Image (cartoon, rainbow, N blue to C red; front, side, top):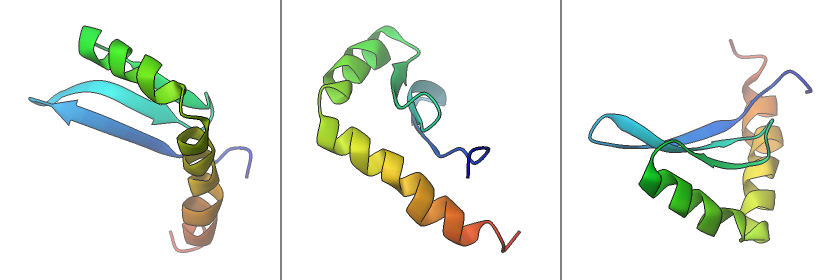
Length: 66
């Protein structure tokens, strides 16, 4: 499970502006808007914990399919 990564990206106008990466454990912004949103989203510890849990619930169950 250590080498499995769950990521969730958000795009606007074909440009990625924010991403959650389970290895980093927080949102990372790539534009000015993304940085502001990442700061706001990283304050919500319950959402961060839920996204970290997605790695186990989503990725672990689908690892054997591919």
